[in-house]
Amino acid sequence: MSHILSLAAGTLPEFQPEQVARAAGEAGFSHCGFTIEPEHWGAAALAGSKAAIADHGLSVLDVEVVWIPEGGQLTDDHRMIIDAGIELGAANVLVVSSEPDHGRTAEALHKLCSWAEPGNMRVALEFLMITAVQSMDSALDIIRKADHPAAALLIDTLHFQRAGHRAAQLEDVEACLLPYTQICDGNRDCEKSFEAYLEDAIDLRSCPGEGSLPVAEIIGVLPEAIPLSLEIRSKIYRDRFPDPTDRASAVRTASLAYLEQHKIAVR
Image (cartoon, rainbow, N blue to C red; front, side, top):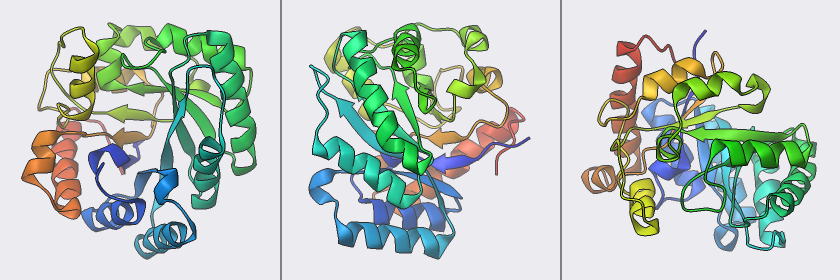
């Protein structure tokens, strides 16, 4: 079976959803993801995004990012991101958390799931070193405490590496908790500081095969045909390809070569 290859919003972080959709379609992607910024979202942005999606026959893999604040209190802006995902037909919404208490984060996650339920969206919690949820075990504990069928786990190959996990650990994760995954390459190691982890996440990613991460090994242990979201948040690619379509095409071409080399079929 083959994997969906989607263009993640993070690959084009300076562009609005309509521009991301048009770049994804022109570059040959069948799916894409959007960052929904409440201050820039409204009827015009929704209409433009829907038109671009329709023009290119795209599907929306995810919207992001719902950031649960310390204290766990959700706001109208969080609800707006969920509602935007439903309106756009997104399959997933990406969530991170600054709340260190697992119980409070689980309560917020459950509420997000109830908001997302009418759109049949999965609510995928991502762990990363610049948030309060820094490991797969912590994320899974929160997901189980949330006790909602929409709650899910998001694996990002970079953050998986930074948490010190090994691919074999994914064998014990239920496939139903993994609706999609984010892939990229990068440096094998990173200095253990907030500033270094932040730069690593937003500037130093690379396409699969251009770094030192075990990307193919991780994909090989994940559920068969899991959708792959190409998250190439890279200063090098931003500087080299300022045009969104050119950048989307470049990361797609480079990533397809790596996936083909490792006999990972995509569509």
